[in-house]
Length: 420
Image (cartoon, rainbow, N blue to C red; front, side, top):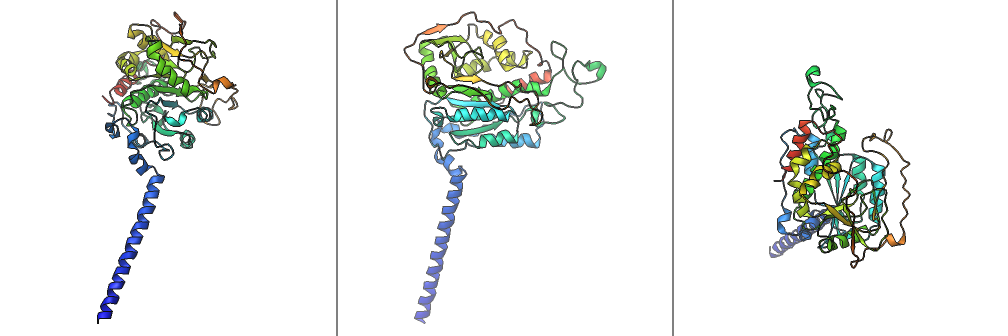
């Protein structure tokens, strides 16, 4: 009898040991899976952000003008996914310059821009955010292949490209070209030249404004970022020294150029490669590789009404013609005398987006990168040479139009209120 009890006890102990072993193995496998998908990794490394407040999820207010569709809701959720490659780059440098690459649907250009970024000295120290104007699978796949830094994708969930038959895309009742709304019984407000809205064109300004509001005020990763954020586009070739030069420029800006609101990687004249002087340059703000901080963003955001009501579909011309002049003093940017970024695009954003119809310039770029452009080539001891009274868009320019529809202006203002 005693031997039977001992046998049963041994069996019970054996079964318990087997169960514990199976549980342990299952736990190890589960942990490995979670690490693979960055789930645990992102929690362990939550200290890469600048305060514990930054782990909260910010829910934007849905614009009143819109009824979200299934894709819009899906993109909104995707925007809350943590960055990729947290397992490869678990720590970010504290004084980092965050990089935002905003893209449309030019995959050939995007591949060139990302390849240039992969060779940038210091790129692994910071976060790269890629902001998409809607959703295009080929563009998404290209970005998913990035392995050289932390990367987060955000998708404009209210882009005209993801809606069909309703605003902000074209609806069956929309006026076209120079239609008379009364005569045609159609919907729309013409611009100052009598033309009605084109959804693919107005998406330029909508995307830029949505992106700015989202990056500065809506993302867990950046809403508490106190440093500069660098903005580039998919048709910008970035030199290997760009990040190190930008770090120097943002550090020197307040000391060398108190009047400078921003720092630029390239001259405002896009065809220029710089003067080659042994000095820094202060000039009007350019739209290739520009960086500013939260203080400047607050000044821009406070001018939302002027930005959203100016009749021009270009965000940059709107800024030059109405926002910057409203600051009350000239808006200068600081840069080096050799460019660290080049605008290489030849195809416009709206010449067709499919492979068969898109504007093509053979997909190659011929940009010579000299040895001096591979390392930081800005000297802290340099003086600043300032350009004054430069040519370009200024206060008084009335705009190229394309932004006359009341609905676009109202949606623009809704974007300004998303995180307020």
